[in-house]
Length: 253
Image (cartoon, rainbow, N blue to C red):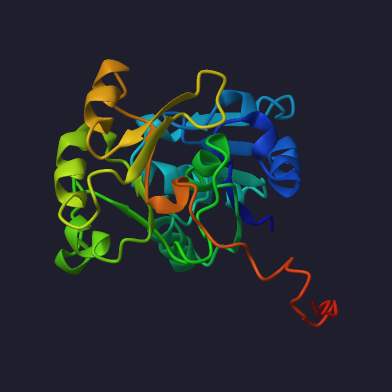
């Protein structure tokens, strides 16, 4: 019997799905894709006759019903999620239900929107003497956030941060970040990173809310915050000519 494949479609650019993920989409008999977020061009490579379902209009039971039926008929199912399905992808509940049916599945990772957002602004999250930690989080909405993971609590670390699914609450985001980050801390909002209509707004905690509202950014955006977007940092030891490691002997000065 064929497996079910959970595929990370990447952040939006059709070329950013992995080669492995694309090959599965090309030969899948049934494709269930998250149409509210996945660029439809990504599944445009499907074979003739493939059954296409948009999960934006389906509930969990309906998704599983289609998946189980197809798998029992010997069909290959591609469940296509945006970004990387392990981050806010709601795949665990799907996998647990497939386990109950004894259906084998595989997860194919994808490029998450938070790394696509960093690429869009040409920055590195982990700069020596600035930050060696990246926190991915979100504000509570319909899905609650554990109290121990409140934005204020996480902001106390002052490390690099990627905030998902929260741009519509930008005023609250800024208010809570400012309890620990300096008002001049760089912050960027990247809407639809890697899409053709990508939009970037960069500022500080002092003015980013105003800038976002001016650009009418209210959804489908990453918020990146931290001094990794600044210009003060130490160079890495990795390429330091005086630093020795397993593959290179350093030069004594």
